[in-house]
Image (tube, rainbow, N blue to C red; front, side):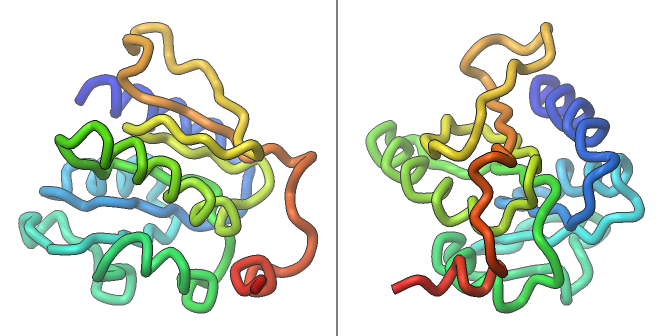
Length: 168
């Protein structure tokens, strides 16, 4: 948990000059959501969660809680979010290593159209999206424990995010 906090502390500073909302993929008991609220008190934080199990004091307001299958909700998120995300935190997964790897391959491309140019992704899973540049984690974070990516501004898709999400 210290690795997660250290990475989020770094990321909050890294996005301080970027516009945009925050995405929290996986609420759990709400501790990380609370930490994000403390780090970024002036940002709207949208939380994606299948089942809410957190303490009532650690839950986002209803308008910021997006319930359902995270992958399905990300597919339609551009229609509901007010802006691109400056920061996204992913804390999702399964104990099944193969399922975890498969999930990681699907979640990055769904997240990419929602990220602002230069936005930061902090993740408990390694992502494989060409447009994301892997950054080093803070020095006290054991390699492979957590991952930090920046959305490469040179590869940012032009056009609005609704068009990016709805390309058939």
